[in-house]
Length: 519
Image (tube, rainbow, N blue to C red; front, top):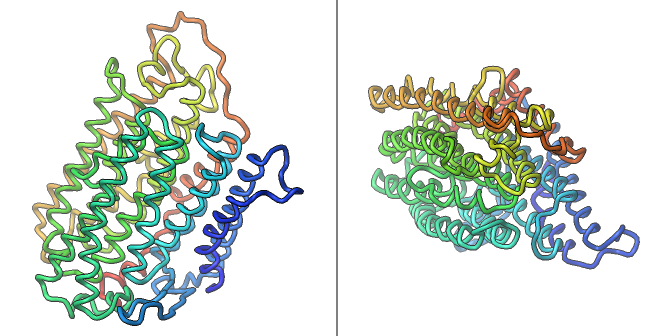
């Protein structure tokens, strides 16, 4: 188990370095470009296999206990250790990350975005994977910060070099927002470590903030929370997200939504809830308020983009939908209850699977039409996918109804549990305030259904007034697209029909985390 976890974290970096080397003569295939893309698929497949082996070897009877641990002294002067481990909270995120990177590498093998050298693309993709996997596996505050920052440069270049229109501006906005948030977050992490005498997250969680004064906890939550909120992203710190998604290549959007956004909410659960419970209780009502506003704001922005004549970009619409969906995650965390936090973790996984699938589908539409403009897709020359590419239309309709939270699919359980948590928040929190947030969240689910059904009607059925136009031939789903998308569909159905698979992992770990490290 220790070997598998260390291998999962080291393999992407080794693979990134190997990607920059000349391919051996026997492995070049038709061209060096094909060889390096095959290398990316192979490395991510091996990492996914190791993650599956780690999952099979995980003791599912004790998911609250950290397993596959490594604890080695690194910087003695600061008492910083290379401390690794996984529990029921981090294991699903680790596995989903490995899966999404493999699917993106497979998709890129057949549909590489236009840009510079494929070697650089594969190397950056693997460095990005190393940073995201490490974020979910490290148990030291400074290591967490290093892993958290490690993803910024690769994602910046993926947007700036392989993105679409306005990619430079979007890349700069992404990195400036996240870097500024990270600087503030580092101050909060140092405040905790220097005041408690350790950066070890397990020891700090077990202490449950007893070594930190209330003022220190409030300052730490404010500083760390800002950095995590930018990455989540939480309204009103979200403005970098729509531009980044719109400009990013398809796989960049999939990874940004499916993996990178989860790093922020994971930090709230892993660091702030157990280490600074007093500070979190002070700020929880405000976090809940921002979350509720974000739910409605994201939905209203999507409704505006979906209206006919507004020239709404479908990628931008899905980006704004992420603001709303992540609002449910933050609302669940703000309740500080096992129900709410379990809902937040479930919604995290569901959003990664469903929104990753949506961005794959929109990328396929953009490749076929050269645009993601909704008016164009729904007009006389538009998609009308049910008649022209029925399998593509079916996949898009499935992803949309999963995203709106249809019971029986993964999107339902997390948002429902977050609302249940708001109905009965933790002791000491204002129940009337959280009942208000619950009502606003319920309104958000209705608005979400509204804009997603509008998108399905317009893109899958086309413009009724344009029915007389001759139908244009449209390539339906290709074999590589089917291979990249089907696992996401299957997992969305599995998690929706059998939520106990995921909740059985997270619930014992959440119970222990909220109890201050005590089972």
